[in-house]
Image (cartoon, rainbow, N blue to C red; front, side, top):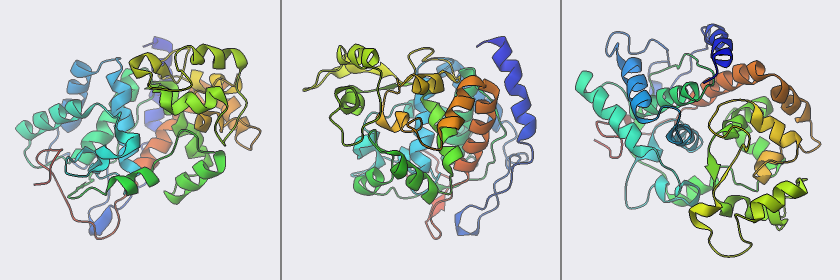
Length: 325
């Protein structure tokens, strides 16, 4: 983690002290950064400690961050993505490659020892995703807390319908994010999470071979390099995994946006942000100003984390994140 980057992110924390309260479903208490101050004062320290021991700056950090995104986009931030069952969100095609569940389970177990039946799995995901970003050299922010866990998970069809796809065009992405109360600036900033992590060949194959209905400009040499890892037909296995950001795949920085400007976005849904649309100028700004990206990303993460489950959904504080009480 570069010291200059770390120091520049410190100001983000101060900028987010004013974060607006957001109400959870079913008339629950509003979210607040100090929600557990009396009932579990060590909650954030426990989460950070387990994340540092289990994740550090490794690949699992991006996996934990991805869990939070996939949770919030389907029925709000309610930890439903963690539930096991005969048919759960885990069974949806976009979620088959999700990992990081054992890290969340370890955090939850540590919290249960310190303050039983108090901290929700949904709040664990929110805190762990913030720590994942910070441990990779990105910004930090105050996380509003007080979410509850859903007792049920939607089926895989519903889940797939509500998650972005690798070949979505810009219009589809703006619509999907807008349905969740996230605007085009949030979309552009949150997409920067792809500055870390990797994707399977199946997700970027259509982009590098030009076989998708969604076509955005791609650098020919970049496409050729990726074709060597990802065959046109057949499975590629782990050999076909490629980093979203080829420059610094394990550092949370703004290199992702420079990739887009060079037409080297791995997915069509990545390159859509820089495709002659009104978002080009925002991509250019983030690509040249790491601090601006960090500030907007932190704000957008708080905003996404405030997406509540549907009114009337049964909720609780789960004792084990993978099953209802």
